[in-house]
Image (cartoon, rainbow, N blue to C red; front, side, top):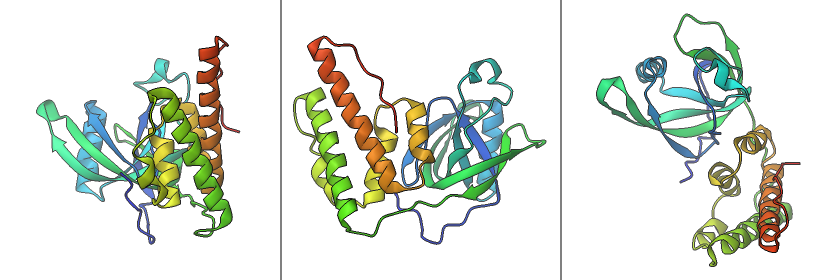
Length: 228
């Protein structure tokens, strides 16, 4: 479900980082997370005692060898606010985090067991509401998504009708977050400031995936989707 970020959004200058190996978080979306490592249990306790905001960031490739240290992260992440927090046995938490806005993270040394960064809020550049470019991009995106759903399931998605009336940025970010794509591709989508270009990139990836599935049916080799 899309949660519209407030227009007057402001974030703390310094926020905790929750780095993850395979999750890219987008503004306006909501993600459930299970918090079990001691350092991140402490982070949630501190966030609850503060302003309720933290940032999710994707770990760069090769993180496995240094996971319990501080392996490099992609500098563009997404800040989120805690919506729900459920305490679990042994100090663990189940949380739901609502995406507020894309941020550029400038990490710095800290005495805390978890990582902290200075956060610069990044713009979401939107075309004029209802302009021809937006209408075309929406139709292209929903058309590619509908064809892919039909190819996979053999029937049209019932969600498409509701998607046609959704705000454009909501549609683009929700599909970017929830489509089954490699995390490196999702990170490229998150890096894009222009929502129209992000939409076009998602459409491109959907069409590549549709082509790959068609080739597999024909016995050709699968392609690998990329964002251009």
